Length: 108
Image 1 (tube, rainbow, N blue to C red):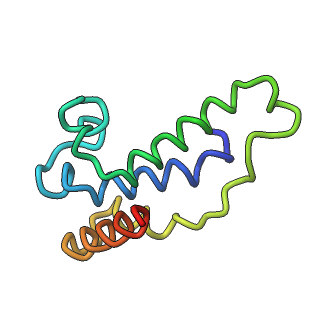
Image 2: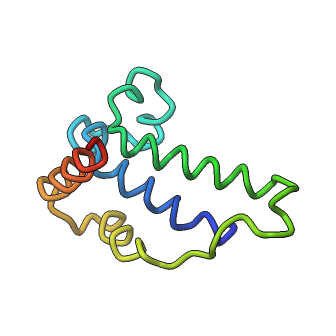
């Protein structure tokens, strides 16, 4: 994978893992994205992050960005959060609260 999209991918993964579609309804993140009915219930923050990730992936093959570069390289900012969620080392209630607070913060 190209290093410039790693942070965006981890943001999307973290947001999806915190979403009610995965935490409460116990669906896979892939199902939450691909199923139109479930995708409607995703938080706006997750939709925005998914859009950013897809735009980054499009930028990889965009010939206009080939010379300048797509974006800055991965910073590793989300590595620890991603690792905790991937291994199951988290409190679901706390993660839901984080998502709610981030979602309400972005709506303002």
